[in-house]
Length: 279
Length: 115
Image 1 (cartoon, chains in turn brown, orange):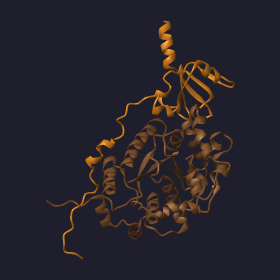
Image 2 (cartoon, chains in turn yellow, green):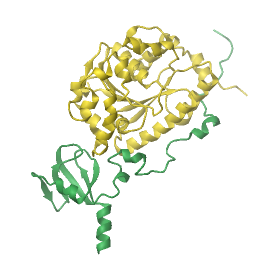
Image 3 (cartoon, chains in turn green, cyan):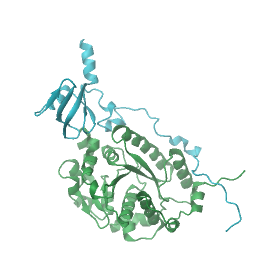
Image 4 (cartoon, chains in turn brown, cyan):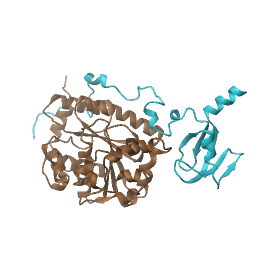
């Protein structure tokens, strides 16, 4: 087994990168896959969401960056997935790496030894473009782009696609864009629907699974230290993440799951405006 | 089952002119001192290197000054003057490998001025 490495990236903040990473990874683990998640964000939100105190977790990813520990030594085994934790010290990694030739390849090199131990590796990138995000994209096979369906997030996708172009040209020719994950989707607003349609049409990027509906449960989940999937919370968003995980694994998606995620054929045609009026 | 004929459908949604200002990627001028400065391997990020090297194992190109190049000559190393390559530890991947050595832009400029 060799893991597929997914970078979950969008330079825009607050679009649901961490929530997407955590819940898709947990949904894959629920299907029997061995999954590793790497927290590449100095804010340590993924680490915190899994119930760890980022400031009390040692060693962390920063120890790997500065050469104090291998990536394998930093792995913490959570009940759902394995995690490489991060904390605010990772902010210094940008400076540590900046003068190093081949700095883009550090994470890729560290992950290489672990790929045989997992089915999937998810890298939760920081909401900025820096050496760490370039490391995440260089280490990845595929990029998942979480996108909140609103104008500034749309712009973030344009910027990320430009960055992916740079990474493919300079450090990782085999990097592929797997597609968009529509997050915090509210089908009742015309703006949400317009943005989603335009993203799919303009960038020819496929939409992975159904859009993830907005729910206060996602905001509450980090306090319990587990994903919504692991907590067994039954909301349409959790069903959407299960469908996304199945799509990434190439498994069939039950209509019942799509219905539960609020994405029936009629809803899909209506939201994406796929019906054509006959003249 | 309804007798009403189903409406034909598109396979993809249509783009909206509302978002044209958001812009498609790839229209930006490339600047070695801008976004590309993040990449140690970008051709534009090392415009003043005196010696250009490329590792045969990791395929990472990078630039060095003459002094930096001299630091690579720590034993054991091998120099192949016929093919212009050096066997030493690659600073990018840390493994011993053949590095292709070429004169960099800065050294070419210096040599041109002196001749």
